[in-house]
Length: 250
Image (cartoon, rainbow, N blue to C red):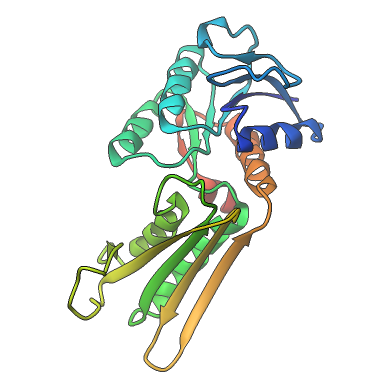
């Protein structure tokens, strides 16, 4: 049985992960970490990392960037693998995570859904077949999401850009422009409203037709399930930085 510490255990995804683990015979939540102890969890919750008594096999992080780096410091000291499901990191922070992965195994994905990562692979392949197409990415999320565009939209754009030899650039805002669309741009658009869990669409526009691929999440459970897939993979790995492609290509 894999023993899990949930970082950000009182958040919506932390609570969803705890529910999924409770139904899974291969995992056990031994403790959680959050800024407050809500008092309604079935496992110990710590607000001070120095007080943790349990010895987890892996940490799953559904929090915010500042909390991620707090738990990474703890993980390095205890030599514990970390699955990072948090988004909204700056480029500098991503580089810091990469440096830390030289010391411990780290699995990071902007989206823990297995299918969205399949989509990332598919749109990369399609972009090579439709090189003259105009590419637009639209992402839709609930009205409480604070980062924009979503990490998943950037994940999809990066996958396409890499397939096209990194010749593309990202256009987030056209309202101040008075010029025609550049063939080298990938348009990225954000929509916020209601309680939408997450929807991402990549459209390839050719002269007389278009091709569209969409991934729509209807339950947060898929992210928790993906995080457990990542954790199961990570506990057997050496220090390094891993992502969902390591599982897809396994």
